[in-house]
Length: 172
Image (cartoon, rainbow, N blue to C red):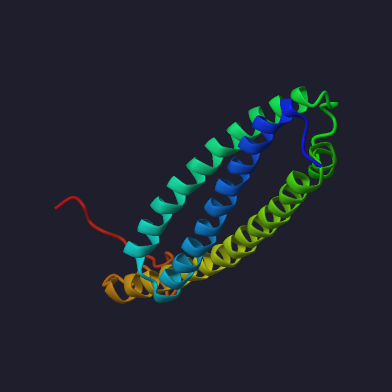
């Protein structure tokens, strides 16, 4: 079964957009894996570089998402579908067997890719927090060793010593 003629063009455009989004999320997953490796090596230059690439991909995905929304509106209008039926299954039924099955497959693949990005991002966030705590600890230790006045303790914090009674003759 083929989709009604009015739906063919927006359905094809939606399929192209979803395919581009899927490719973008897969690139993002690969980039996040590289970022995780950079965090493991504590390679700050690579982490920053990966972050810039990540920002570019996320921007492109946001543009695709806006296009997807407007194309979806056009598809719903062309098919005379209720706007509340913005689900893959409802659209797949309206589009027919071939186009509907491609849409279902793309939707499932896209959901998997988005979930993979979420999971990998969460792991990296934890690793970055651990790295930050480690570097902060090292810096505090260095500050302690360099503190000649003995004002800073082992944690790099000001240490309150015992009260000392002292008088200074300022008249001379």
